[in-house]
Length: 599
Figure (spheres, rainbow, N blue to C red):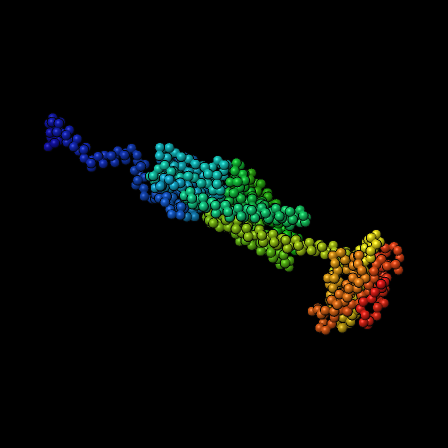
């Protein structure tokens, strides 16, 4: 009927009908939805897409993992721009990004998107890419005015120009909108597989995390620097190649850790993006070369395997050559080859240390024990670099923990090794001045000291005491108990003399069973007799080295020198011969153990 009236020329009622329809809520809602859907198809699809959840930034601990809450898409061409991705984000094959997601980009671009909503705009939140060494990474979102906000970081940019100069790329999230915001993360990374996780942190949680990390990393790098400086000082002071190699190894290993953990880019070279990008590849190679060199210097493989020694040298040269080629022509294949050679270097180090340990050197046990933590932790970053395991705590910090344990163990082993070598050199040098069995001075050294003492006595008009001692029952020990027990008796007699001598005195073995003790002056005859009496009494004490019931029997001849019977000239040999004659004149069975010659 209404249509009929409209057609029959009664437009008034038709207009009223249409106006009534437009005034209804149902028709207005349908019309508005149609118009909005036609004008903004992307909005309609966004509302209909339920695969991308909205993260509420209100975690109690201030930390949210984006794994399982974000989607990724790989741009195989690497040429897609942000506007294209946004316009076609629901047409592109975005998929859920699971924990441990690993992909080798190498010319491709990884896009990650997530939705986040911040109920409390007074709280600041940031997203962190929890790994150093990423080439380029950027965060994009639209602000309240609809304009794009872009933040960039990565090794291709100076760390000083990052939104937050830090070890890892960190970007601030929107703080102006209380509605859901879609964020896009664009990642470029070449040569190594990318598996870094993304986390959202509140400002207090991120600050607490950084404080803990900086404390632990500062302790490690402080220890490494201290050990390197002390080792370098020992290398210079003692001319020890082992400490020099250790200092080089510790320094290059710490530098490699600084490059891989982002410490170098943050503190050491924040304005050098080229070196920051190169350090993660070059410094580990230098650390491997210095590790082989250090192991070779300490173990000295040429003693037991010339082939292994040559292999270690060839591996060092091959690693250095490959590092130069890889720096000039960086490729994924070159990185894999370098990683394989580093694995070979670790194997050679293990072989060197194990064979040296088997050789019987006790200090090699400490050095071998020192290498164990690093060898045990080295596979984790290697497997990560090969894309076999994702980024985790062990792949990032396992090698640092192993190095922190290795550093003091190796240093202690080197100290023992150096002490053993210095002791051997000291013994070799002392053979020219000491008697091997008793450790006392030999006759030549004693005569030189006696000559100097005679000169001083003439100059200052004072006298010294010269005691000649004989182990009178040495022949009985040899006859009844054998040569070994007789040698024990001589060693005990020499020990008695060494304990009785002062720092300025000198004791020596001057015959098969005869000794001499020079007591520097000024000294009185009474003092000389008291010293001889104490010496005889100490020798009579029992010892576990001698047969039960046996004692040392000493005969002592005492003279105050210079002696006028030996002439006015300070002739040490004449004085010594004169006193030996007086000592040998004492009967073997005499009950009087002490004889005074010239007083």
